[in-house]
Amino acid sequence: MTHNIAVIGGDGIGPDVTAEAIKVIRAAGVDIATTEFDLGGDRYLRDGEILSDETLDALRPFDSILLGAVGHPDVKPGVIERGLLLKMRFELDLYINQRPFLGTAPGGTVQHDFIVIRENTEGPYVGEGGALRVGTPNEVATQGSVNTRFGVERCIRYAFELAVNRERKHVTLVHKTNVLSFAGDLWQRTFDEVAAEYPQVGTAYNHVDAACIYFVQDPHRYDVIVTDNLFGDILTDLGGAVSGGIGLASSANLNPARTGPSMFEPVHGSAPDIAGQNKANPTAAILSAALMLDFLDEGVAADRIRAACAEPVTGSTTDVGAAIAARVGS
Image (cartoon, rainbow, N blue to C red; front, side, top):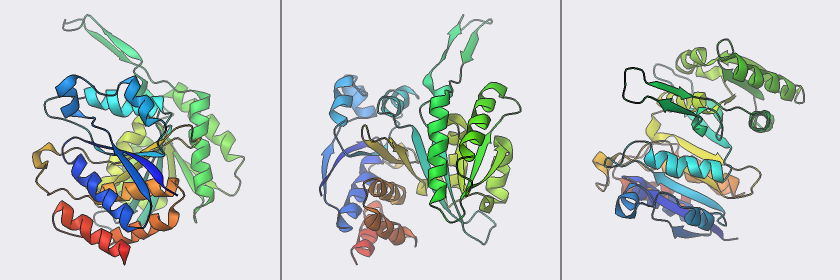
């Protein structure tokens, strides 16, 4: 079977690391056909295109989307991120952000293995709010957090379904129910009701500030974590930091209903200071490609790629990609 993959190299080091990920996929023997989409800061500066509805419609038929990185020093922060990343998440209903963390925390000796499931289409990122009297001493800004029973439940249910198939079978809800009493109550009640349907899965609750401490001091307590959009965004950066560095962190933006393509990207940024210098480590992009293969029912190839990435490789971007591809091919 040939998988049709849309490739958005994006900005900075994005095109370079994505090229290595594609190289490794092919070395694993997976048949893919790739179509490049020129999107990102350079395209925006050239003709104003971020992600038009026409381009979005062109992406919909693909089996998946592989993205490198976005962020350009000559474009105001938030323009590309909201116009490209968030638009894809919302319009393609990529309601699950899944980020695995396998590593040894600084000062630790035993490897941890946990997954953060982040609700990806609600919360503060929907853009509810506004500003009044901007630039004056009386300026007012509001930013709302939208949480629906529908969105919260499908995210929590996905986390439990994932946990059922893991050895530890445990899900931890992370929120701030003692202060965010309306949204927190919705998350907690929904979590408890879904948990009752999975008696074989253990559960726990942590406030998000406590979870930040445990990520550093005791990450082994976690198996599957489920949380909202904002808390998940912050926690997964910390998860990367305690698992070998954010430069090695992979992620999947999933539409589990498969009504459109899912999107896979490394967590790291575009690193414009080293763009085009063949210095970036492509491992996170390669591991993101492995997540993509999992979702495309190419689990055997995905496991081979993860095994090939288990031992660190040093060298240039292309050296690392070639070494991992050689391991996979052998």
